[in-house]
Image (cartoon, rainbow, N blue to C red; front, top):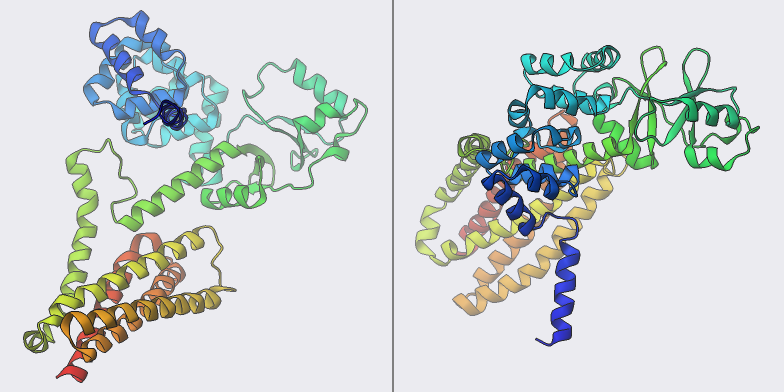
Length: 464
């Protein structure tokens, strides 16, 4: 390898690691913990973002995690708690000194406190609520009364608002003279005398306008109000669909009660995507790398059991053709190919369908077009691979008839796989069953049963 090539590789590696924890940094931090050097630990942790510290706490073992938290002590930042995975957050909270926990929680916005409290037991919730100021506690407790996974749980109560009759100068003076503004905000929400939101104004537009300009005249064209009971998945969809940065949340009387910002909406989208992937794989939506062997086994066992039942069903189909397989041994060699190709094709269509349903791209208006497309894709792929397998049957086993049988079965199974991959999740969605959770078992069963039945059934008709 030339020096220039080596430098290029090193540069690419540095770029790939630019936003990830370095192993040498983690090793240095753990060494400081081992020797009890708090000053060095603080020095090493100080440049790290709260998200990086949270990642490190998730990656190291429980023993090192507890020692690090104890030594880091009062430097522990509340943002770390909000970035931590739920699977170890409770453990970290228990390890923190009450005074440190109190200070960490006070630094958080109300939506982060709500997110923190949701997964704790009642005693821990009360311990955290007690350290909040009265106004913050009331706001958090009210948020907890809203349905789980709703806009009311997702929103933050800290809102910057202004009367709709103000001008730019009055709004700027208000911002400069107010001490308890949120740490980060993107809009000023205009409200009418009944505290109902009527529009948003971006900070950039505000600062670029003359003082005498009325706020009403510089409102954003795109304005969406979110009901407090709206499911958070629909909130995230609205943010993604309409390119929102923040949106006001209203109660049943349409009065402003909070605001949702893009970071929270994108976090929900990320969680939705992660859940879909885990469910499609049948490993449980709560699976985490930090889970114990027992927890991981408990999450995966039910779906392995479902898979066993589908395999038994496929075996029952095979058993019906036992005599044919005994007479033509080549059938036993070739039949896994048909089922495997169908399973892969079904999974491809299924993944596309589940994702499209989640993003609302697959709807009643285009479902038949998509079903037709998948059938045609299955047919084209089936014909292409049928030609290949036909030649395999001819030259490997010296039987044109056997080649024709597996070719025909391949076409049938790939068409059925494409149809099942779309129709099964759509039907489950109509039945109010999560398609990401249940589709895989149904599609696998269909492709296995149809594949084996088509191949072996045709073999009986043609070869025997």
